[in-house]
Length: 607
Image 1 (tube, one colour):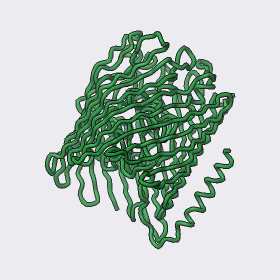
Image 2 (tube, rainbow, N blue to C red):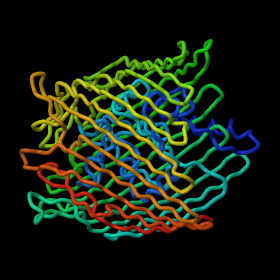
Image 3 (cartoon, rainbow, N blue to C red):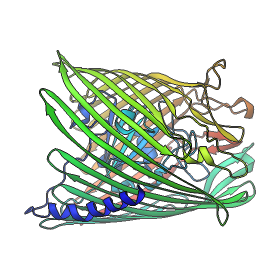
Image 4 (cartoon, rainbow, N blue to C red):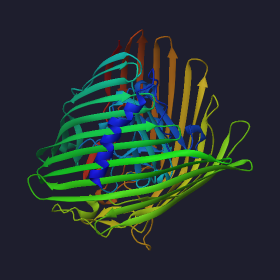
């Protein structure tokens, strides 16, 4: 299977552009996907809470990582751990972390050696300057994308060539922070190309403390490089991204470090009524600690072919998705555990009028072939929506959701953790009812949701187990006002109760560190060459850890960005944690700090 998919990837990557080359001039390829559906052409039409973060939003935010951008712009997105052993962000949506699926240009991206209740991707591996937009769709997405999409989907869409241009950027900040970025685009008669490069350096800064602030431990340094090439024609686009980083930190009297390399390739061809999407990603992570040196190497090959059409007044989409995963993990220089598995999933989606309502039905059949633990699952989704004359839209939906256990959870044996090959996939249902108006000048949306998972996977006493039940319910809302020509105000809020119980007779408990309340807002001002953005986020009633006497306080994070743009130059001053709010997150008897107040200054020049 692996060999077949490699051959298909090579053939399509080199043959299909040749067919596209007969065009007289290159035009920008239309958006490849609408996240959360195979039918709709706009996110505004989806019967689900949806959010779009543009390249301009990212630039204006001044943030230096994608996790912060998501937390600032999407209600209910909470970064549980803003610093960690490897500075890895733990993004939660609707109370889950692992079950949030990340796509890159429509291709699923996740480590097959991930661990329960931790992110399946590294959010440092997405240079912000290379992102065209981020589409976020809340709610169950398994009927569209399969495993890992119970809480929602984050689709990162990278920039394509855009005429002839060049950009350079330099940024400096506290703790030895340095960031440099450069890109260039050019277009010919039948093909356009874009190339980019980013480098980041950071020195020593505080990380956490053990038991008391007097036992502080620091990050010792971070160094990364990333680069990529995008090629496109009239109806195809080919992308390559590669990168690496190294990072060091203090750890109970030792200096530890890790290193990672990653590569991503994708190719999409759009015909009139069908498309082909191919992807390959690989990542190798090495960790050198006082307790051992470990390696984790994951690779995945993806092939998807689909199309759309009409049948009477109904609109439909069809397709077949295939993914081959392989992983190796163990000790560096020692024995490795090697596993692979194949996922094949035919899918279809239909939309048709039902009186004044629009009905949407999706169906996906997941087939997983892996040694000793095969699995198949039929995943339906149904929704109803009605558009009113004033632009308001009401919708209600129900979707089956599920997530496969990772290779690590099934087979790890590293001396302190033993895998559980008898783990069941996580499965359940996602329900939501919402009302929105995304087309008005002052757009808004509100949604009630309920997510229920059986057999949710968690770490327990040296292995991984399925807990009896998990549920998360709540309400999330957002509204945006355009206050004249210069001012824009945005407010959002989320109340949620993510809870689980280990056995059917256990009481419900909320996950450690998870907040009950999140309230956010932003105020933007623009006049002439100047613009300013003030954003704030209040987090309330986080769940503590009585065993370690951790009773977390509520906190408010306030960030400020001031920009000046004239002709081909932009100068931006960004302040994170303006009022120097001090808070921690407890994990494994260590208390990780939130970001200290700091100022970053950047200069961008366009040629």
